[in-house]
Image (cartoon, rainbow, N blue to C red; front, top):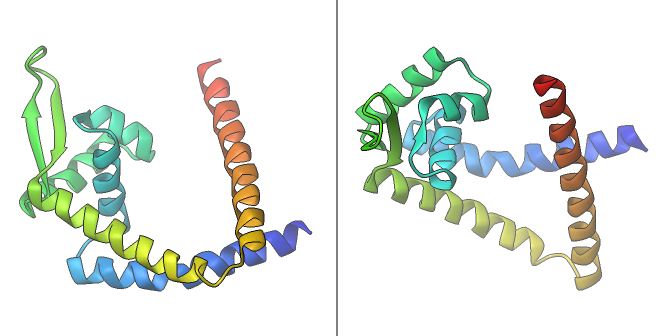
Length: 149
């Protein structure tokens, strides 16, 4: 059963990705750059250290990624008013509209797919995704507590 779950999950993700990849290619963005943009949408004003930790990359790697996004006009850096040593990162207007467009395209594609599911099928999908999310949350909590110990 586990192998079937791996197979189906992988197949679903692979089939969903071409639409997203097409949008990324049009924008000339890498997967990691996109992760930074979506992170900044969720964590407005994040520090480099917090972003590097969340993305599980080295701080120097994150700096190079953000440098490119700043040059592209998608991200802005600002020093923190309370601590001049701390630099905060924000989506620029262009970055925010880019993220919104990508989210809109992804949502539109998933809406089309979910329109093909009956109400009972959608209920089963929601239940399964809730179970998967709970398992992911538990796994992350376990990993965090091992790191903290």
